[in-house]
Figure 1 (tube, rainbow, N blue to C red):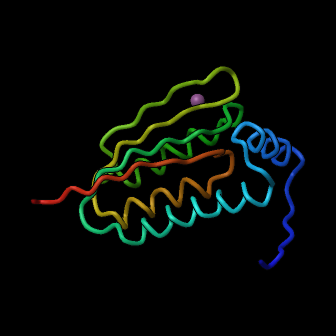
Figure 2 (cartoon, protein in one colour):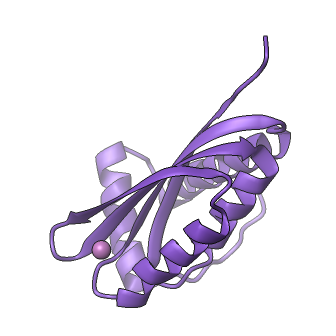
Figure 3 (cartoon, protein in one colour):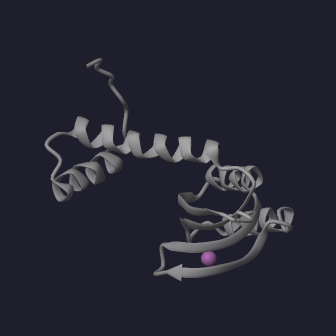
Length: 135
Ligand code: NI
């Protein structure tokens, strides 16, 4: 197997080691391989999603950063034709949770998700996509 070296922040490494312990992985390599497989399968699935879909998008952001809420709302307005609803919740003092319910062309929704992912202050983005087929 080829060997690659990666750089991680000490915070991320600490979290990774906790994750490895709790999930029972035998090594960091095994855990990282699994995480990469997960990301790649999400990516590959997204390439095959076409046509009309509905997606629920969950976004966790840092509560301290005021502009992040504003930037998310600006983006929401810009994509008004695909965002049916959204909800903003505070998780303690540290995080904000935003849920977007969307419907439209898969490609457009994935573009919306990519824009959220690239925002500073956004910590995590997860989504569930369901095709709306006519049959
Ligand atoms: Ni907030």
